[in-house]
Amino acid sequence: MTRNEGATAYHLRDRHGASRSVAYLMLAGGPFVFVTGALMTRGLGAFDYVAISLTSAMLVAGGLTCWLRPSALPDSIWLLAPYLATTLITGINLVTEDASTGAQLFYLWPVLYAANFVSRRSVIYTLIYVVAGDGVVVFSLLETDRAGTDLASITLAMTMTAVVVVPLRERAEKLRIRLERQALADPLTGLANRRSFDEELRAAGAWVRRGARSIALVTVDVDHFKKINDSWGHAIGDQALRVVAAALREVAGDDDVVARLGGDEFVMLLRADRQQALRTTDALRAAIAATTELPGGPPGLSIGVAVLPDHATTTEDLLAASDGALYQAKSRGRGQVAVATRQNVDHPAVTPARRPPDRAASTR
Image 1 (cartoon, one colour):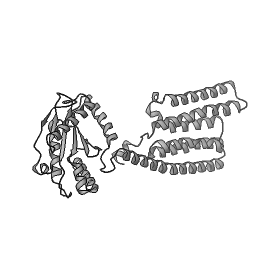
Image 2 (tube, one colour):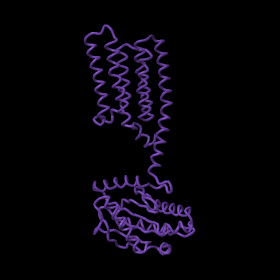
Image 3 (cartoon, rainbow, N blue to C red):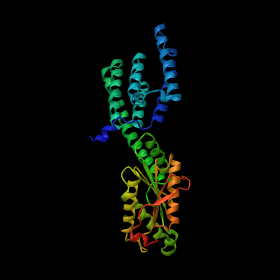
Image 4 (cartoon, rainbow, N blue to C red):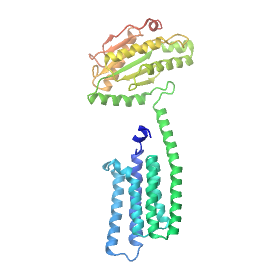
């Protein structure tokens, strides 16, 4: 077993769905226990009647809690739910002395719950616990031959249920993950899109506020991109965007975020200070200058750099500062790197960082 498998062996996949599933069971089980145990059973003593009534009331109360305030319950409850349900079903079947097929079919709930919400390992453990619980019931209440037959039938039925449901659940989960990735990725370049970037920017801002290091926002525009499209066609324009995206990926670190915001505008969200960010822009421009696959040569880049908390106090100000620096880089002739200052976040003053490489400058 790998470390990753061990870490997810008891992972809960859908807390909301799990809490609702438990709520449904308890809200349905409470009245069922009262009707079948108290109203439909003759010869009950006062103690039995009170015990069944209290059990029903506790089930309803628990179901309402799971429905209305699931956050009030610890996460371990949802992982233990199939075992607790199996114990409850076994106890009720023993108390009511009911080993009928209908009573045994209640074990489907913990199996279906485990197959939908917990790991494969927990599904196996749940199956073992269900078979053991049902074995206690049938061998306590039925003749040995009948008990063995019933237990074998229930074991097969529960196992086949898990075998069918688990792969369906995993396939649906893979599809969900794929759709989420598509929703957060730019279809042309494969980079993060604006929606994904906004989420990452908020998370990075919170990271800085917790006392971590600074973050740098590098905004990149392809110089004269319209001219590339007009001169070589949109296919080459798309290729140029993919070249820039590949260069951005190449120079970004594992913890950095690279996104295409739209058109020819890209951003890099770096966990870095000003000097580290400038080294990254140097590496980016060198990577672009080395490109040989475009018929018109490597595209020029205008780049704006801003750092939180050096140039801004919020992520919104950081965006404005980086955009302002990019504007200054363009207004000074394009093909440049400009760094924001804190004099004016809305229209930041900038300092030229480094002269662009000769090859990149020749493309302006």
